[in-house]
Length: 242
Ligand SMILES: [Fe+2]
Image 1 (cartoon, rainbow, N blue to C red):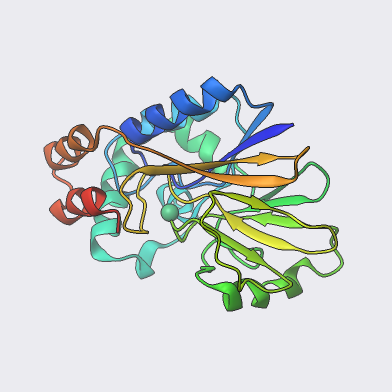
Image 2: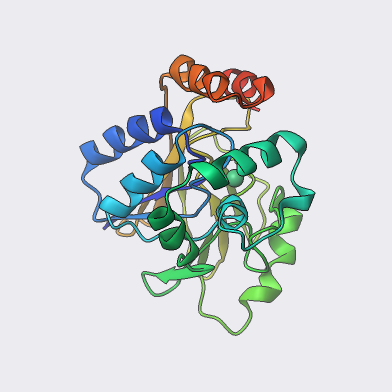
């Protein structure tokens, strides 16, 4: 079984369309979304509509919670907060209702857990291996072998039994009797200095995860940010992937 994993679409319609075009070519059995359909870019309704129409299971991200009025964005940076305020008016009521019903976590394939930030909180970042290991206590007593997460916007692969091997391959192998934290990277605002949209595939037969990237129409997305009167810095960062 092939499961496409996507995260942090952030109202970036151009990146979302490019990623789905690639995903559809592979005809995966399932698609799972790790949240943050909103924030940062100019097409929140269009991106939410796509996920809703495809009936993709989706977690609520921190930007989604803020847009729904379920989380106070006081700790957001100024630019992010400005977009939230704009999107609060922009988002249709039916999309807000749908987003506010998205769960905090999802379990799929029995032992796979999907979260936005981390098992402890959608707001907590897993940036490095130590962050991931600190989260293991939140998996205790749960039959979880792979925790898929987003939020950091960085493709990541951390294993409980050490993460010292650097791989040049974009395909990583899961081993039995080990636990993993995997982030496919961000569709709508990559931050690993690669501006291409990021996503991935979990192959349950081969027990592998494949990190994928695809170029998209950044110019159009940037123009929409500026046309909506949103901060220039958000348009700039898309071009450099940070
Ligand atoms: Fe995000």
